[in-house]
Every structure is written in structure tokens, then in C-alpha cells.
Length: 97
Image (cartoon, rainbow, N blue to C red; front, side, top):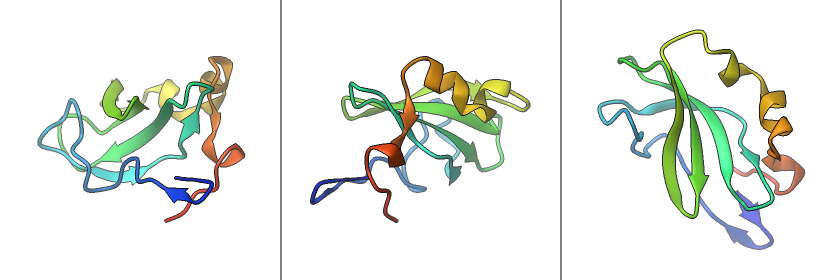
């Protein structure tokens, strides 16, 4: 994520997965941000007990919000996040690889 001239890595595929220590991220969804600067995103995980999850980065800490072993509607609908004050990060900050 980039803010002004500052580029900051929030999470990547090498980041340890909270709640699933033996698994890693394989795909990161579009991040969303709120007015407090908290970032939430869905992510797919490599094969294991948890297939994907919803994660929160707040005050520099990453935590699992919602584990999903398959079929959770909440992981597929960003309007749920918009309803509680989150919006796509790219609305605020340009994303860079």
C-alpha cells in the first residue's frame, strides 16, 4: 500500500497466517480500509484445515476475523464490509505490487 511517497507492505504471500500456523496465503483479496486505518481482506490459503479467511490488520497487527472451511457468504460480499465503514483501499491509496 502506498500513502504519499511512503510504500508500506501490509501483508504478502510469505506472511505467517494467524489461526493457521501450518498454512500460507496463496491469494489475497482486494483490501478494504476504514477511517481508523484498519485494513480488512479475504485470502485463500494453501491446502489444510482452513480454505480461506477474513483477516484484519489493525495497529500493525494481523489477526484472523473469520475462518472459512468452505462456502462462507461473508467472504464473498464486500457490501457487508461497506455497511460497517470499510471501503476499497484503492479509493484512498493506489495499490502497488
